[in-house]
Length: 166
Ligand SMILES: [Zn+2]
Image 1 (cartoon, rainbow, N blue to C red):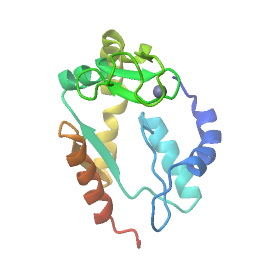
Image 2: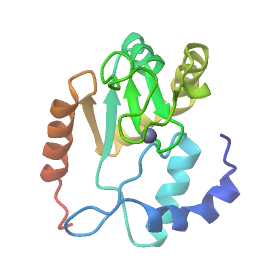
Image 3: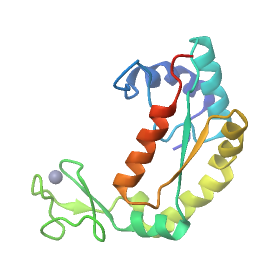
Image 4: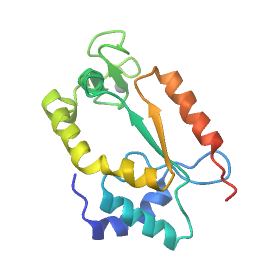
């Protein structure tokens, strides 16, 4: 999806208003945004105008092969949106949602050829953000190849370590 910057600026307030609030002390979480340097710069300006700033940026890292393996196996319920994986978290009956009995299908975005293109887009457009946020001292690298509980614990540790009194 291409979002033009002028539209992005207009969407920014709405995005922040709708972002997931943190349990204590307020704040917000942006998931999968910004994805490009211009978006990051627009976000920084928008936050600055509101007297806000980012406390941290989490970079979830995983090797390409593992990314492809995980995403290619993903299946989504066409009725309730529940997510499964044919390798790691299978439904009780193949192709059928445990929760609602709906049909599971693979999103077009999750096909291997599309994933390869998404990885190329990541490298050309999103990867520069690592340097951008690293220079600002905001970047925290999370090893996303670990099991979900370990990744969740690491994220919780990083969030707990943030000095939110500033
Ligand atoms: Zn379902």
